[in-house]
Length: 155
Image (cartoon, rainbow, N blue to C red; front, side):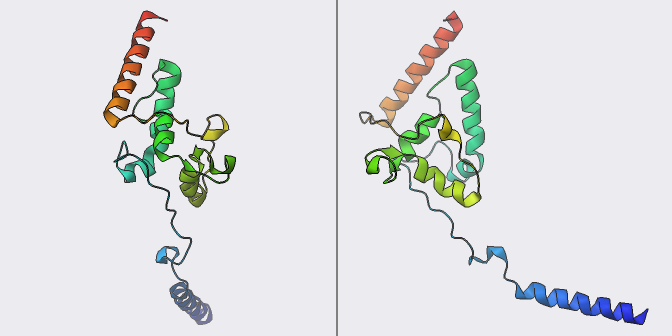
């Protein structure tokens, strides 16, 4: 009995010593954190930490509103993300077009998350005339109101 107790004590001591010898993953020596490009707007539709954590929930809720209710151009539209966060990417049309892939891809690659939005949606931003934020908001609100009216009329 004493031999098994002594063996377990030595094993426990060895585990404690080895645990202290292995650096923790969060020590900063691991994979560097991604630094996606900053958006064009003054601020995002939500605080950065909320967008990092919940952007997919926002986009899925907006998708449901768009598909089922015909409501487009709302606060969490994918087009809004593209308009603000698309950057020139040398891998896409020799950098002639702005795309969302570098912005989204930086964090998604780091997190090991599949980025499948662009299997259906185009990540390339369309060049549009520059509108002030107030004008862009007025256009979105008018578009939303027109869609709501059409839905209410059954068209």
